[in-house]
Amino acid sequence: MVRIDRVVTRGGDSGQTSLGDGSRVSKTDVRIEAIGAVDEANASIGVLRTQTRGRPEDAMLGRVQNDLFDVGADLCVPGEAGERLRLTEAPVGRLEAEVEAMNATLPVLSSFILPGGTDASALGHVARVSVRRAERAVLAVGEVNPVVPRYLNRLSDHLFVLSRVLNENAAADVLWVPGANRR
Image (cartoon, rainbow, N blue to C red):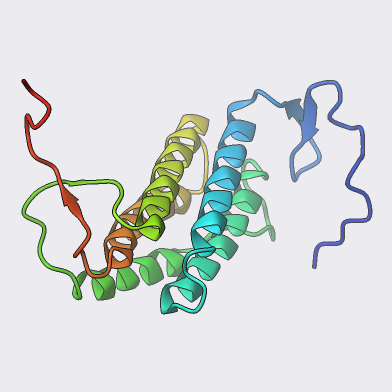
């Protein structure tokens, strides 16, 4: 269990921060950018959860938030980590199963959809693009646990399908109309 005795450490005042292996790196390091992007995605999902309380989707999102903490822990220890936490394939498989189950309740898409619809769906799309940004940041790091980018890729798919579910089984999906803004 993690124990946090102090929040203010002053250790990062000079633009450096510590990784999980004790090494110090610049706060502009690509690994720190990736960790921050994963944290931002987690916060976006937290905002989405304000719209899913009391719904079965809230439990899925709670598991995702815990997974994203594990992703951050994985990313903060470069190289071989020994007994350190590493994301496994199990959460990837869980996301795939949830996507399949949610998608089975939806009409087949015949067009791209515009992000939006209900408040919950719009927040789901914001979380989805945050996850996509985190995925790109993780790929820029280079040497990472190969499960991490797969997990983030599945998570963005999961959030897309979830956003459609949150549009009350796609009744509120707004379809993209090619050239609709042309005069």
